[in-house]
Amino acid sequence: MPSPGVAAVDRALSILAAFEDAPEPMTLAELARRTKMYKSTLLRLMTSLQEFGYLVQFADGRYHLGPTPFRLGAVYQRSNNLHDRVMPLLRQLVADGTESPSFHVRHDAKRRLCVFRVDSRHSTLDRVEAGMLLPLDRGAAGRVILAFDGEKGAGYDEIREAGIAVSFGERDPDCAGLACPVFGPAGKCVGALSLSGPKPRFTPENTKAMTSLLLKAAIRLTRALGGPIELLDKTLSAAAADLRPARRARR
Image (spheres, rainbow, N blue to C red):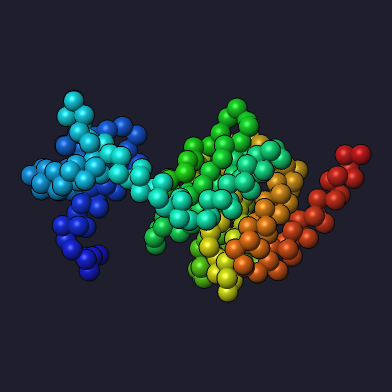
């Protein structure tokens, strides 16, 4: 779809976006393939991006992001009190022995952004990092965001009713995850709190225990943001009731 903005700005931002999932610096030819722009057009735009520190060119001729995006990211974190509210909760989940916790928000019509992430203490982890863009329609966190943004369908109705989503191998065949919504004022879903890791560790018993811990964290965060906790509290009560027989069986 054509953008209603300035074409040159759109193209410059497309160049920066090409680096989102690039593990290494790229040559001009690689950038041309990713952006579908002529090399001459790229060079003109990249001259301005380099001038303002958005891109750097290495001695071997390849390009990568410069220091300006990092600086702007730091400004965003300082001005966004979510960092101070979310990160202690993620660290506490790890201390309680859960899989790796993350906080995701909607990025656009098809993708979600992992804003915050803390790796678990396990030796093997799933491949998720803060700053990654992931699909909205695959994975527990994405489906929670879609459900509480009003997406239609029986599966999303079930998530809205249950207050939580669990996924096994949707995005990565070797990984699993569970997620629940976080609400802000007026009941708007501001994001999804999730736990993810290798699928074999998501046993029924572990999943039940982690569900309870995740919901407690989501309730604390929702309350801090001024959102309603009734659905999360109801889901937590159901999870606690489901967990009691397993605890008695271990005795």
